[in-house]
Image (cartoon, rainbow, N blue to C red; front, side):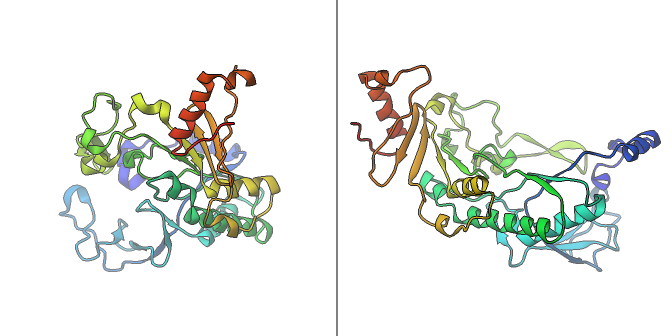
Length: 326
């Protein structure tokens, strides 16, 4: 960070340093996603003629900026790839990192894993529900975290999966899905980019991007932002959400406080389709029957009215299913 930001980065005073040493944090919060291999790049040298003093990467394009003597090449060979170009999953890498933090900051300092997860592509609710890659990701990471606790003596006090539901992922917009709950966003598609109903604050091809090496906004988002696909606020009422198999598995782990066998969660959705729609919740089990949860403030008898029956049918249609109401 110091190399990238330079003199624009503030520094601790000696007094502040002393205060930090005297007042130890209560815990260590760790965000972690992926793992990579690193190896020496001995021939990777600084080119003083390069723009802004950047490193010359002509001969070794995969090398990362260093000081000319300890530059490294980042490799992701044979590691499971997420939807995000930068994310390569590895449970054993997570265990090594937990141990590294524990050894550096002291085994008595609690570690809270404040974020951990993987992005997996899903263009439909059905693809989202059959969440094999994410189930295996979480199983691998929690298995290795368990071994770090029981075998290595690492004091992990809490774990938080990222994230509960698919959401806005920075410059990738709504394309990359980290959630364990599938969100149907009702996109404004690329051809409707000028649609006045779309959020005017959503990024476009001309949206500036901050360049940390120069400290300005010289770049533009370009085609990347064409595929961020803003939701249309006028159709937000029709948005639906569907639990993915990873959510069902994590729920079982949480309930049992054990590392549940993920085998039954790898293919067909274990519990059928639970669809959280605009007017309540519909459930598709083996009988293909649906139940609608009572609306807040409405009595059960009100649900039997023609109006509420219409709401039930609307909710089922929003979930892309048929409905049979008795």
